[in-house]
Image (tube, rainbow, N blue to C red; front, side):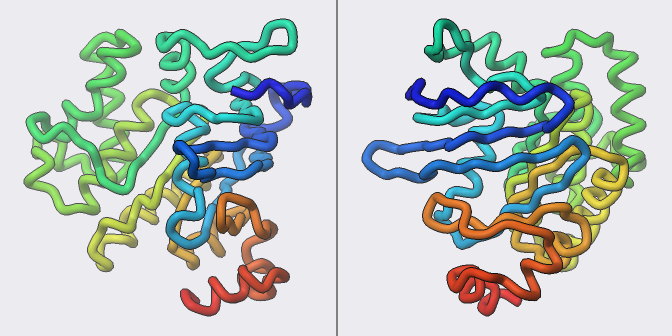
Length: 265
């Protein structure tokens, strides 16, 4: 891990995410080549770009599922995955990294539900096992969250009995059960049949309207235009262009952005 970056930590309250020249390599392959981004509290940022551009890797770096090789990432003013001492960075103990991660909800492309547990049991698993919340309290909260995502009547259903859209909504409820300060979505609708996409995006719209800070990797340009505060186009491990969604989508300034949008809009 490089300790060359000398930028001071952002003050808590100014931004929820501060990425400063973040680099990530997989062996000789440099996937992120100096990503610098800011996400304010309550803001929705959508990341777009072709496959292999580094979007999902950057998302995974935010909650330290991937270690950065250089640069620094702060969430809520706290350095992610490392502590700083004497100008050098030292990796956190896995237990400390897990403590940070539990405040960051993540919803994956594939739902990753426990197949042998009901929707309700999936939602209460982390609060009872990680946060040691009493089961009765966790069940009450899980029932509220399943109702919030429109699945109050599916609490006793197993994943195999649910549609893909329903499973993804359970996954969102499961992430919210940990009361995260930040939600990350990694192409949450790309594995769904087209007619099921809307129900998941509807839950995400409601979540954004409630003030949740969100970073969303997506190909849903209508959602990005309508909901995002900031749209970021990535390609080749760098931020090519960013800005207000409607302006960027209707009048991109970079030729690479124009070429990408011309194929998908």
